[in-house]
Structures are given as C-alpha cells and as structure tokens.
Image (spheres, rainbow, N blue to C red):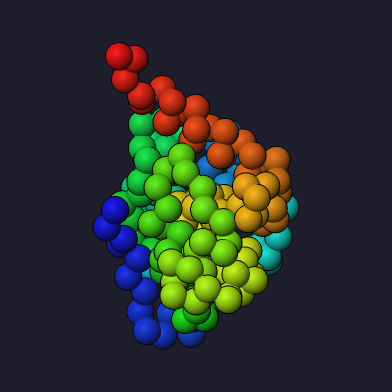
Length: 183
C-alpha cells in the first residue's frame, strides 16, 4: 500500500504556527474530530480519547478541508475501503512518525504484536517504545494503531478505549470474511 504520509521536516513546529481547522463527523465508534493544518489531515480524535489535545487547539470549525477524508471514512465504515489514500501530517517525534508510517503497512483485518512491529522497524528490543508511540498516534483509524495487540494476541491499551478497539478489529474481520469467495 503506498503511503501518502508526506510530513514536512519541521511538521512538529510548523503545525503549531499554522492555523488549524476542524470538523466533527459521526461514525459507528462515535463522533470523530478531524483536524487539519494547511488543508492536510493532522488529527483524528475520538471522544474521551487518551492524549486528545484540548479542543481550543483545533481551530475554527470548517468542513472544507475534509471532503476526501469524510468520503474515505464513510467507505471504510461501509466495508468498501480497506486502505486510505490521503495526505497526512501527524505531529510527533521522528521515532513516533516512523512507527506511525509502519502502522499504515499493517494489512486491513490483520494484527501484529508490539514486538513484531518493533522487529519490522529493525529495533527488536523497542517493543515498549513502539507501544508508547502507538498510543500517541494522532490519526486513529486511518493510521491503524488498533491493529497492534499484545504478544499473545490479547487486546491491550488503545487511546480510544478497548471497546472501540474490539469494535474496529471485529468490524475489519467481518468485512474481510465477507470478501472471501464461497467456493
């Protein structure tokens, strides 16, 4: 899957100086707040999400920058989209951004452990750091941090709550099963 995450080298500072815009859309997992800087998605936050920034940092409400995001999220929740093709600019450290890019490589309907993701990054002893970066993901669902599980396959922490994580994983598995040929 081609990643369209094309952050600027100074995204973590540029985003702070660029006026943000936001909108809120309904979804099967509750309202989703979308945030953009310069028209590029930099946040997707759930209600009561851990590490959700204060609402006053989201800028004025303006649905204009989010047309493609809203369409692709609707397709995802309808079960017709398995990958997202959007420009993204998540704000984070270089290591966090590396982890978030790797999350986009986890196929729809599949899961990996924190340790396996650390291995994929060439940092086999960094499972805990990968977990911390995963928990700070500012663009949930589109950057699918919900697809990372504990080493035994158990559901462990999720910024949006374990109930939402379970819902998203079950939804993707059901949608994946619906795509399997009958014969």
